[in-house]
Length: 90
Image (tube, rainbow, N blue to C red):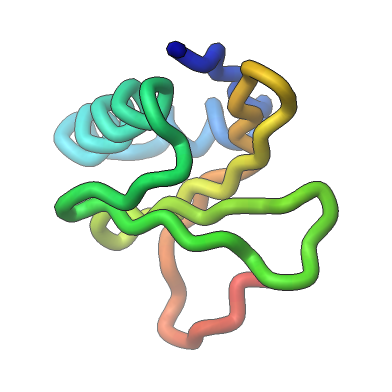
């Protein structure tokens, strides 16, 4: 079953600000995410955020992070950002 993908305005702006190779890599991983949003892949970790409602997931693509949540058959990408030096993602 393929999931639909909805991308927030903030995430769309972030994608436009990226250089072409990074944007292509993230788009490729989002397309793979449509098939199975729960399973990590090579060079693309998926972690479930603790204590978040609705359950929020974070996908790591190189130095970039993609946060998303699932609702029925739709993946909602809420934000994208570049990893900072510390581990706090708030």
